[in-house]
Length: 399
Image 1 (cartoon, rainbow, N blue to C red):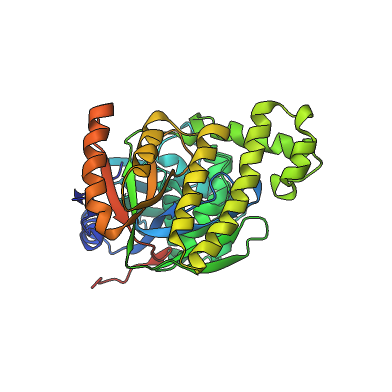
Image 2 (image 1 turned 90 degrees about the vertical axis):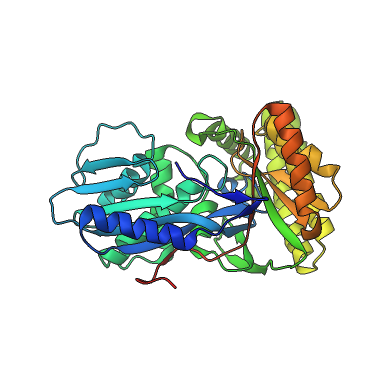
């Protein structure tokens, strides 16, 4: 669906080319000048599968994202073009759609359904989108697409929705239409991201704190296994059911209200698989708190150790890893200059996130590329990301 260019593990900057391509394609197709929105994907430094358990997370928006062009339609119907796929979808607003709740169309239809339920009126529109987030890599291309769309509608039709209201619409669309029972982290960070910062987010209170993340000595390196996952069709939703079942059994609204002492006191009454998943969530919440402190103290070795602990929990307790992800994390432990690594995202494929000293990055990449291809017969893609800004309108004439 989306595409990337790589050179020695570093992404070739495509932002201006992407913007120009989207503007040009929209104008050629619809003969009008659009509003253009950019929404980022994200990394999550630590705090995986804690957001829907009302816990703590530490994500950062990145410099990969979705570019979306939108303008009012002169027709009585809407047209959406997935530029990278060369696919077009035409429909009437709020019609009964027979399409299954899958594919890229579902994200748009879900947003429109949430607007319909809220009695928010819009008019027919034309839209074209493209992006440089690899779909299925655990970088939240779906939340970026949802946020870009609702942000574009809000700007075009002057809906006066607040950023949090737009986040809630995107989040509800993913739950109610796409069918992924995700937490709010992805939509939140894509909307509120800040250059050179992570956001420490309490998913229960929605209170947040900007955490400075800029350090010239380290890189955030993503290694993409090329294993694709679909969260709606995976065991993702079952993990949530397990956690909520344990919380209910212990008389809590969520695992946020459960500590390890209470969990262990009731271990005999809880199925072992559910117990391990709940224990992981409790331990991961604590790791997020420790990671925030480590970053503030610039103790990146401690942060790296916490990342490895997080992966071990995801691998053995939460059981959402896979052979390819485990191979890359294990390999990273043997490499000088790699401080930490873990799988990132829903699981069952996607990327590992690696905290690497800048001077060691190329050497690690060369080793990882060769050994991964030898082991799995697949070329390993890799790219360095920088913490960046959240969803925003793009000026008419970008510099």
